[in-house]
Length: 117
Image (cartoon, rainbow, N blue to C red; front, side, top):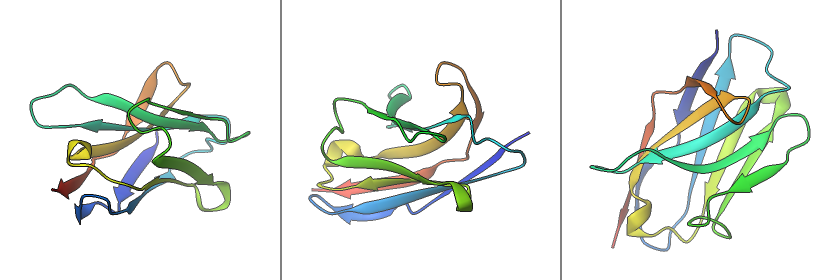
């Protein structure tokens, strides 16, 4: 069993920045993949970024490439999502998840990010 807890969401003006954190607990997951997803009102949940714990290989959705950076701190069991140059269309509930990169077994409760224009 894995527990994931996100934090760092909030209200920010367009062009601003936020850093989301996701703390994982419950089992050793150094070989797992961690990902960030988001869901805007009335829309399906979509992939944002992912990172492997062991080698820090990253992958991004085209919509956030160059603006968002995913990173991890193995010692703290924490994954971060640094979000810069935020746009109103980035407004969503952001979720972290863990799995093998194809199947995401565990999800956090989500944190709200609101970008005002």
